[in-house]
Amino acid sequence: MSKGNKGFGSMFTGGLDDEENLDKSTPAEGIMASRSQTLARIATGKSVADRTEWVDPAKCRPWRMHNRDLDHLTEESCRDLIDSFLSAKKQRIPAIVRRLKDDPEYDFEIIAGVRRWWTVTWLRAHHHPEFDYLVTIQSVTDEEAFRVSDVENRSRKDISDWERAKEYTIALAEFYENSQSQMAEHLNLSKSWLSRLLDVARLPAEIVTAFSDTHDITVRVARDIKPLTGDAKALAKMRDEAERIEEERTKGGVRLSGPEVAKRLVKATIAPTTKGAGEKEITGRGGKVILRYAKSRGGGLTIKVPPKSETSPSELLKAIEGLLT
Image 1 (tube, helix red, strand yellow):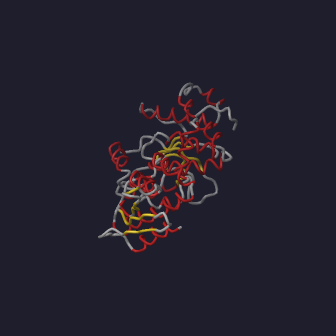
Image 2 (cartoon, rainbow, N blue to C red; image 1 turned 45 degrees about the vertical axis):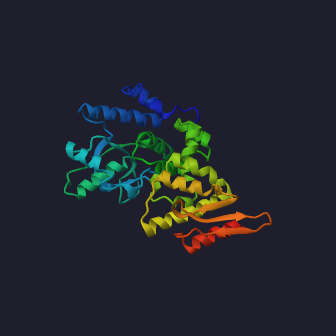
Image 3 (cartoon, rainbow, N blue to C red; image 1 turned 60 degrees about the horizontal axis):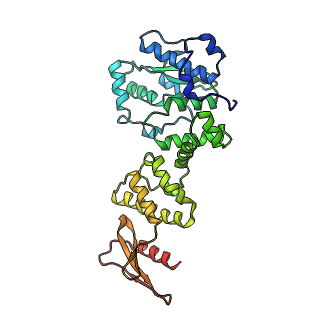
């Protein structure tokens, strides 16, 4: 596909009812035009396009590059769709799928509409077997499928930056030769925004463990942390802090928000503040002071452990080791 292709935003306007123009358009443009026609017909109560039909959700499977964490699809997270489907007695907006070949278990692969598929499946399993899955069937390549899915879901607030960043990272390697410039051009995105989004998925795994939910890792959170991961000393300090945060969560039940975790990680990389005449302090778990120290002109080191310190011996020893290295 040439770099001269128009961005997907232009596919939503102009010529949607002109079959001759649709035949001359690119496959991706035809997909979005067909979808617009389908939505218009549904909205007016008219019959839908020939390629739109009701199917059994059990015969559909999500595409390998769909941008939903299936573990986060629950009755609670899909409550709005469940209530909407029950109120309308059907699904109104079709998903986008493509037909599978040589798969005895599934007939269709879901390009966009995994949450709707989950909702219909849930309803059928909870006393509503009458519900079917409304889909628009398209013939697309993987790269076209990625762009269709991106247009469908880019503005959705219920898709986290983490989900989107993971999907974009895979697409960058598979479809755009690891060129962010090429990817930004094809998706009609700014290079700076794309770079910030990809940084979400590029955080080291040992830093990610500090977050109780990966969906808490937003572009803004990653913006504060990612630049520090390039410094070996700063990264080591953040790793230690991430371990403390994870221990607080698993043993003490302390759950921090994404911004709170980011603040702790960044603070761990900052040099201890000066106290009194050359005295400095080191904070540990929860931001509490675990020891104070002062260096003399002759090279000596004085260490003071505050009374009633709640730090563990291992944490204290690790802080002292850091002073001696």
